[in-house]
Image (tube, rainbow, N blue to C red; front, side, top):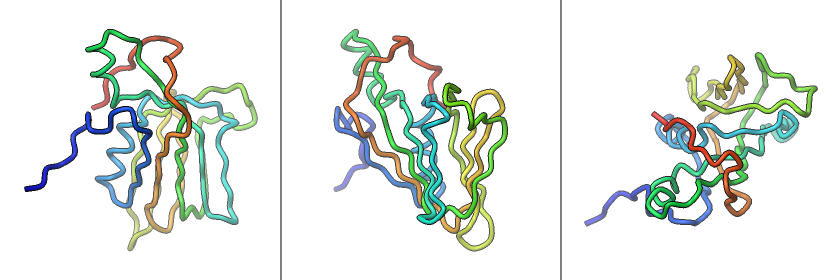
Length: 159
């Protein structure tokens, strides 16, 4: 008998997850909700058809453990990578200002014909980044050890 993985099974291991369909992307979106990053950490590599951003992700998967152990909540630096990107457009994003801090609210996919569509990064303050993709291929990978969240506050819980 097999059993689905539980949220707690991840423990303190770094995340390294991929999304190839809408259900998978919902999981990544939940884990990346309330991530913050400077606008300067976004990079589009047209020749590689890749868009990447280094985010400071709240560790939702560790929240219960932090509450039980009465310790501060954590964040971790994480790469969010979207492959098969054909074009990038943004709204309400000051890309030229390296000091602009953006907050990621959600990642969604608008399906087009066949496998193509658009990955939408919805940002706080009515900002958005639209990545036209040939096919859905998104990765979320922790790249540092967790650190105490500077605010020591838990963002509102993901839906």
